[in-house]
Length: 419
Length: 118
Image (tube, rainbow over all chains, first blue to last red; front, top):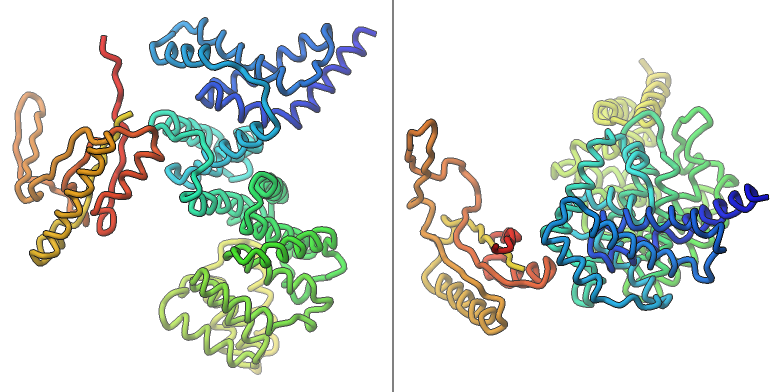
């Protein structure tokens, strides 16, 4: 009987840990002014919960209990600390001076935003922003983050220690940016989420093409940000991730071979994610304050809504690329626009644009530029030229599934070749 | 908290500016200095002579050596600094972004180690 109660309490504490630990941590960091102290406080608070809730019962508001227990445990730790330094005594004085108020729901959500913006502060290196966000905001362990980014755990741990050191020593404030700084700071948060998603979706190196868990984590982060700060570009980014994620199952064969969009089995697409993504794109577009993420999502939405590859509305896609190119000029977007033009006006028109980009010297080392060129030459039955372009693409590609895809194309071309 | 804002700029380009452009820059610097003095964020500042006047001193195994410095050919050189008082890094970044050379060169913002005097 007693064991049953203990097991029940442990289950309950586990559930509360999953739903509340990030909120408790975010508030403890504000109250304690130190990441490490807050993490220790969080740990101590949950240990105390397992010990005490069995006897005294689960408190009416577990979150408030955890925050106040975590704070007291941290103060205790500071007092007992053997290397008690004057800096600690300053923290202690400040801690004892600030009264613990019952946290309003809004206050708790503000603390979560403070945590997101601090982890994604542009004064930290991009690598550190990603590692810190996944660890502190998402609650992944250092080992999990290291594994996802194929980085040795000690390297990753070092990166996190250094980032926390900079937050403390350079005094990066724990705050939501002022209105005038918000666009730039929000960009930096969106960029971190997008990098996490892409690492999960495109896996920059290695055997497998995708790492689903990281994409899932990025989508969860996108939802959190949308909930806390429903800015159009936050909506656009979430939409973009959902619309890509919806196609995950159709992107590779069961043997891990890549399948192009035009050859994908559209019945495998996740309709729920598509309709959620489309709805988000529409609300972002009506705000008239949208940017590159929303536009890319809008392009993905046009693809997602086409019942077959041939039913794709290429005119609309080209139009969206025109707007995107003005909002965020880049050679890669120019390349994608050229591919869309090829679909709307025929391969000659697309090839002329791609050649112009390559002549400029912008994408000469980008494998997808050569693969796109090879594809257009192939469609125009310029076999020798297509083989040349695919060979160049193969030299530059590093991802195994992409290399196998290009090799398949080369073999097909050699087979049809008159020689 | 104190931060040192190190001003890096291309001193050769600076020397090539016509007098009226240099004067305009100096005017902007004066205005910036006045504004942070008024707001109580100014602690100290100095402009440095160009790197052609610099000397590097080392002592190894008790032997002092003196050389013409700086040896590394960098695009931007340290040309001066402001020592400021700021609430936190965001506050310091805001002040640094108003230093006139931010538009042509770059400003490195470094927190000062605070020692509690015994």
